[in-house]
Structure formats: structure tokens, C-alpha cells
Amino acid sequence: MVERSLENFDYWLKLHSLPLHFPRLSQIDDPESGPFLRNGGEEIRQITEQVQGAFRSMIVFPPGQGASTMLSELVRRLRASDVRLYQLLVVIDVARFRDADDLPSDLDAFIRRDLFEQLILQGWVRALFGQRQQQLLSLFGVPSEKDLFDLEYDLRARQPSANERLSTIAEGFAGRTAELYRRLYEQLGLSVTLAFDFPWAADDELVLEIFREVKWFDENEKPRGFPPSALRETYFLTRKQANLAKSVWTVNFADWEFKPYGEGEVFSILSHHFRPYSGVRHYPLINALSDAFISRVWAEGSPLAEMMDKLKQEMLRALDLPRGRTPYTLEPKTAPRGGQS
Image (cartoon, rainbow, N blue to C red; front, side):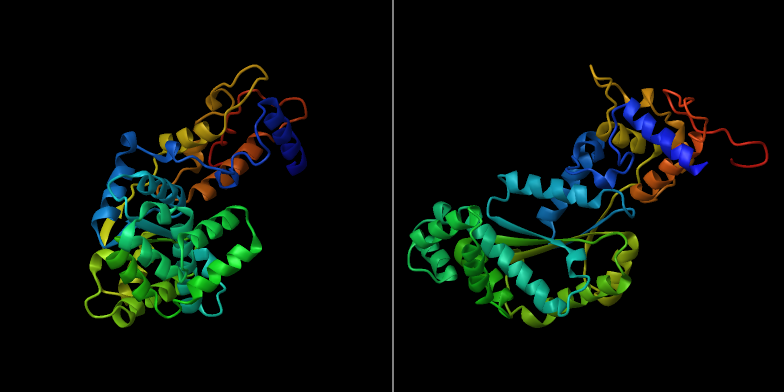
């Protein structure tokens, strides 16, 4: 039974020229932010304004409902914005620190290296003049702008020696990251934003450990008189994770909550990313797959990945048919009286 369902599923995918990973959104190589935006992009505009205006923001998402995609769009907008021209933004994928032997040291080193890399690859040596350019050279510990041009060229050419040089420069500020933030702001006019991306399934202890470290930095490493505008923090996380964070760090966060996707919105996202093809033209997904499937698998606040896994199971159930009977437009299998099939 399972074997013929899988055979029919494979045939149905080929019939509509759909990829083998359908309907898993998580396996899309480069998910666009467009289909995740509602109300003409009003939500991402509100998120962008909050991150720009607040020193500490929590952007709260239902588990697994596009937080990373929205963060990528936020980064794109901030870097393209003329409003915050002088801003460095470090995206921190919390998952990469899951198995860290020394999380405080590893996190600190990641941030410092990313900042120096941005200073090089964004071409700040060309944008700053006079005293500010001299301060930039001093920050890198080099005598002339040619040294930075050489480093930029080698980084873009992916020369291993360039990565080693950059890491050595960043390591010069080990244990002095607060000083680095301050010098960037006071000497170069550059503010830093740290954007933490928490996986929705992250272990509670990892969430607590990250916030304990951020709290320690705020309370013990920032010097007296540290300019608030030198550093902004924003956290993309779930409501449970936000509550955990607030249990260990009682400071004011500006919260913004993302509304869960409705049934129609989930099918719209699916339809955008998966477009059946006849060999001549594309056609709407609803011509191949009934939207009634979404009514079977949708649950408010449920991760999109879980919905897609359930969708595949419902499709396999509907495709439990004799070979050669695969329908062109797939409909859910009708549940018998007294319960589901």
C-alpha cells in the first residue's frame, strides 16, 4: 500500500513537473520574502521601523512561520536604506552555537570578525575621509589605505591568507568588544545592530545561555558612559523563547508580534514557490492540488514544516490507488462515516 502510494506520488510530481522535495518549503534553495509579506509589506515596514528606533527589540513569531525569511528581508532593507546609512548589522544564527565549547568566547569572536569583514567589504575606506579614515586605519592597525584595498581584493578573491589576516585583526579586540562598538560609533559614526535568529526548535538551555551572555555583556563589559546609540539588539524568536529570555533578563524590550498565517495564506505561499509546468507554460497549483488539503493540515501557530509533512502524508493517503489511476487534480481522500480514513 505504501509502495504504490509512493509510486503514484512520484508519477504525479512528474505529471506536473514539480520537484521531488514538494511540498517541503524548507528545501527551497533561495526562498523569496515576497509571498511571506502581507498587507502590501506593512508588517516588514513596522518591523524595520522598530529595529531602527528601539535599542532592544523582540520580533515574536509563531514557531516555524518564516522568521528567518523575514529577518533576511529586514537585513536587505536596512542595508539598502538611506535612513541608516551609518550602520553595521551582524546576523547571528543561534543554531551555529548549539555545540560551542565556550559560547561567550565563540559568540564574541564571531561578532568581531563579522564587523571587520563588513568594514572591508562595504568599502568604508572609500566612504570615510580625513580624520575618520585615519581612525579606520588605526582600527585595523595598518599605515595606509592601500593595505585595506589589498585586503579587500584578496577577500573577494577568497585567498586563505586574507581570512587569516582578517581573523588576526579581529582577535586584537578579544575581550574588548564594547570598546570596538564605542570606537566605531564615536570615531567613525557607525552604529552596530546585532540580529539574533533563534531556531524555533532551539533547546531551552541554549536560549537561556545566549541571553545570560548578552545580559553579562550589558551589565559587566559595557563601560560607564557607553553611548546607547552605539549598539542595538534585535531578537527573532518564539513567544516561549521570549518568555524564557525575560525570566533571566528583566530589561525593557520593544515587542512586535507576528500573526500566524491563515489557511489561505499557507496555500498562497505554497502556490508561489511551486508552479506546475505543462512543458509549454506554468499554471496555478490549484489546478493540480486541491486547497482542501490545507484545511486538513492547517493549525493556527503550527510550524510550516510540520504542515507540509502532514500535507505529504495526506497526499500519499489520497494516492493509495491502483497503478494508472492517478488523478490529474489531486483531492483529499474522503473520510468514511465515523472517522477519518
